[in-house]
Image 1: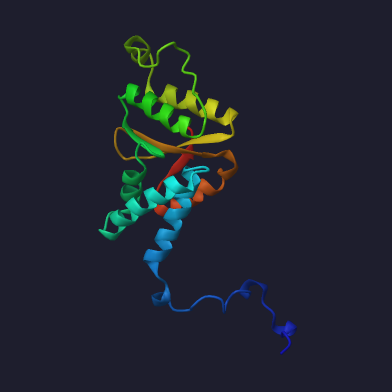
Image 2: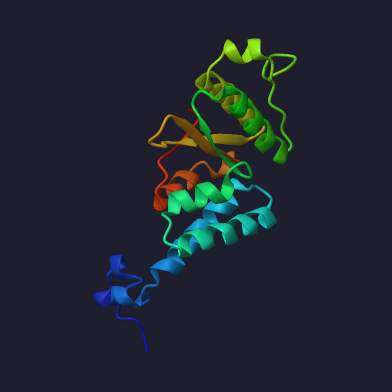
Length: 180
């Protein structure tokens, strides 16, 4: 059978590819697929870690936990961070740990970033900005998202994924942006 070129509608190329009834869609499977893509993005080059976090997130999702909360819990201090705004020492520590996972060392411009004098003279926004700039030099992006609390949260991804991260994260409910 030959195509009907006289009645060809370019906007309808895939009309028969998907079911017309929404009840045929498996929303849980779709959510898991997006969550998996998200975890691959924020675990650059470490599919094994992404899989471990995915299994943890799936448990949370299965118990009815919101996607943002389930993923936040699954990635905390592994591929992401959620830290109180005033905990600048904790922020330095978690950013150092996440950067080390990808083979990058952040220069905090001090001999000892855990020094109380250094920490007293800085704030979370300045630390996040410094980490963002240095990670970009190594072709990574530090992402943060709105927490709705007095906290900072985010993750690191390859710079080549700068277009994909906000789309995938947004589909899960994260309002992500590069940097602070």
